Image 1 (cartoon, rainbow, N blue to C red):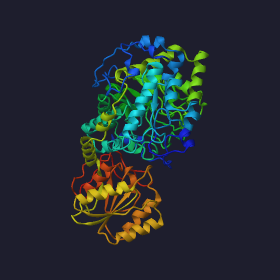
Image 2 (image 1 turned 180 degrees about the vertical axis):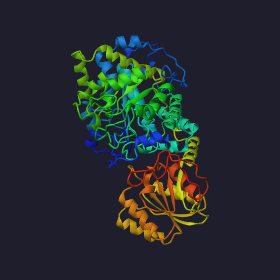
Image 3 (image 1 turned 120 degrees about the vertical axis):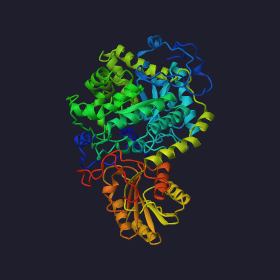
Image 4 (image 1 turned 90 degrees about the vertical axis):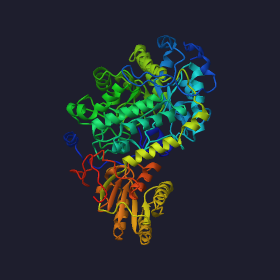
Length: 632
């Protein structure tokens, strides 16, 4: 799934789900890490009022995944006879249930050219009614995420279309990892992402983060979150996972992931762990290519699989596949998404997983390198997948599956297996009982004062002091220049917190960093006693313009504090500075935590959840678990 909240062009939207910095070479080895540690009458259940009822609040009771622990918090009112429901469904309806579509527009009845191009109909409501899809996925770039009341209303209207046309409610999903991958609009709680949680290392923090995410999603009518990422990130060059991972220690990833799953599913929002069987050790972005994971089976068992096994034991509702080749599991060259030995042989039979298997986006190049768009979903179903996520052309994809059923390549019994799992998930999360969400409750539930306070506590515990020569903490009334990368909001939040802590901070917004911006920052540093320079890298190597900026500020002779606002590797690229901080994100709570650390309001608690190699990608400059104290 993608890791950026960008606005693609129409061609982007059909081809990609993110943009990430391409890798240049491999770094920390996996072995090093090992050493270190139809009609409304179709629905046969008690009451049919849901199809036309007014929005009704939160969801019903969930019981986990057969073996799972979560109990949900709703109260089931209706008994759904899934076998009876399946017997009444047409083949077309069963096929539709297995697809999760992108629909463009802020309302269910908004016509959009991209809907017409990719689905053959004009509106989200028509997508639901015509194709009988089992789910939708929301993005800001598809116009689905404007504000909280709008998201809630869109969800309710989409559910009404589903109930009116077939009696089966939708799984409405989004990538809501928080940190760098978030979808809900303001005032959704700006939580730290997974690597921040990894740096804090707190089971309680991870559980509370999951509860906040699940509660806010469900309040908006979104009943499935594609989170958390459980890839064990032992590759510093990884261009697509990075701070989306909890870190490089499989035990820690397992512990925090299960806590977040429990929090989300307690709120009756399905959790989906990703990307099976593990996307953490790759230097290729599967949005644009097909990565190969050359782990041995022993390495998979020790590094990649433990978090998925823990998630299964926790009762996670869904597992998302990775578009990666794992030769030791399947030497055919097929990506895991299309591999029967991986999805059926390993995940179903060996690991005993009984829940829903959802593909990563079928619009990504990593899954489109071998088969045509009409064959990809067929191959995924034959491999063992249940839900086909956002194919580039829904009409083409559904036609491909329809043809495969007609010629006997996919049996109706095979469709029933997947649809039964999907329906079971919907029953478990109370979506049949209460498919609608209340707009007023959503506004009240999203971004509460308590949630924002929790987010700040997590950020305070996660911010990591990597190095310090005694410059920190700054004394009160120090004249501090704050500059570097980031928006006006990032700068304003940082400066505001510094001023609250008694630092005489001045922000300098640079916008595009170039020679002119660098000269402007150097000139401003003349009036300061110290400089806090913010950097941000989506990959391992810090962009040269940022490195040059830091070095120019160091050359002024003023003490320089560097805070990295994404991947923590900037410390080995920017050159010597007086203090180095890793924040793992640029949300308000992250930059306020940086400011609080600089001012000495909080002590450094966060520990590196990944090892940091030397600048050339070899060795180990800072080990897993490293943290510095003030003065060194």
